[in-house]
Each structure stands twice: as structure tokens, then as C-alpha cells.
Image (tube, rainbow, N blue to C red; front, side, top):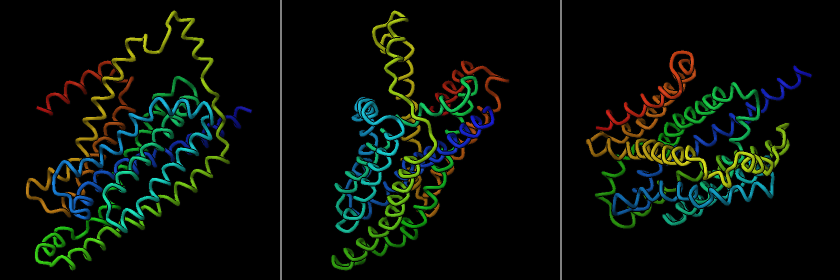
Length: 322
């Protein structure tokens, strides 16, 4: 019985690890999409390119609370399948968006993918805690973080080699073309996104079916935990001050992380670096994060407490930011 339970935990962790890999792969494609769509859709202003990031992450803000309602209706396992299928719909929209070079359709596709991802993450995160002993939960969280960032390191390399290859040469050629030639070249450039996103769409559908029929246990709606709030003398989860501190911390952390990765290609270009060099920079950022996760797994709490590690990282972030 113990061996069977251990094998069930292992299979569950593998499945959730694959999902976290998907999170990272889809999320960190934005760093490549920003310069790509700026050229393909002939965006006139720098800020327009960053609507890619806005459209994707505003879905998290909008869907944060509705996601919990959705999961109460579907259950966590079916919720993960639903999230993957919604993401597939968003990826599908890249086909008409690329064929018409309509920036708004690209943004809508990203918003829908972000919506599906918010449901998927809300459903899958509890499994990281449930699939194993509570005392090793932090280790599993770090492992999932590594899966996420490894995917984030790979995705700019793959998409960049497809969509941004020889882009500097193309930009130079566009300056000498007439309107008809320019439109033809940009149509061809936009079409380069179709195959990758079709592959992503198919992968998401296959993974959704895999999750649906996987041996993952059902996690029930945590209404029982709401009763535990009453036992603690609190009327709401927002009565816990540490929750608010955590919300502010995560808001700042995600902002710093996303800005650093999604703007690094544009920053490199502003330093007169060619695109073939700049498009690899997001991968370097992801590798640095992976190293940080590995250090955390090794050092915490054996050599340094979580509290001291958090304080040191916060102080180091301020110093390096200056």
C-alpha cells in the first residue's frame, strides 16, 4: 500500500511538473513576441509592443477570483483540463491574426491564453502541496519553479530562431521596398507564427485529454477550510495581515521578473546590439533564476532560514536595481 501511494505521488508530481513546464513555455514567449509583433504589425510606438505583456497578465487580474468559482463547478482536475482547452483556443486565434496581421487579434489570443492559464494555475498549485508530505512541500514548490524556468529558458531560443532569425536584415530591406513588396514580406513574417502556435494548440489539447484520464486524485472544493477560518476567529482570509504582505510582495516580485525578461530584448537593441544577439538574453535571465532555485533547494533551511534568505534577496534586489 505504501509503495502504491508513493508511485501515485511520483506520477502526480510528473504530471504537475509537465503543467508547470507549459506555464513557463507559454508565459515567457512574450519576450520574443514583443519585438516580433512590433515589426510584423508595423507598430509605430514602443509602448504598443508592451500591450503584449498587458493583454496576457491583465487576464490574471480579471480571472483571479472567477477562477475559484469555476473550480467549484468543475473540480480541480477538470478545471485543469478546462484551462488547457481555453489556452488552446487562444493559440488557435494566432492563425487568423497572423493571416491578417491584425494586432488586436494577437492581443485577444494572448488574453484568452492568459485566462486559461490563470484557471490552470489556480487548479494545479494545490496539487503541489497535496501530492506528498507537508514537510517536503517547499522542495516540491522549488522543483516546479525549476520546471517553469527551464521552459522559460527554452522558449525564447525556439521561437526566436523561428520568428526573429535574420530580422535585422529584413528590417534593412524593408526600408528600400515599395508598399506592395513590404506588405508581402511582412505577411510572410507574420505567417512564421502559425506553425509554432498550431503545435502549441495541439499539444495543449493532447495534454488536456491526458490530464482528464490521468490518475491524479480529485481535490475537493475547499469549503471545509472555510470552516477552519471560523475556528480561528477570522471572518475572511483577508483578516490575515500576512496575506496582504504576501500579496504586495508577489505583486512587486512578478512586476520585477516580467519587466526584466520582457524588456531585455528592447533594452539590448537600444544599446545597438543586433537581434540575433539580443533574442537570447531572456534565456540568460531564466538560467539565472534556475540557479537561484537550485541554491534555494540546497541552502534553505540547512544553511540559511527562509526569513533570512528572503531579507537577503530583497536587499540584494534593491542594491542591484540602483
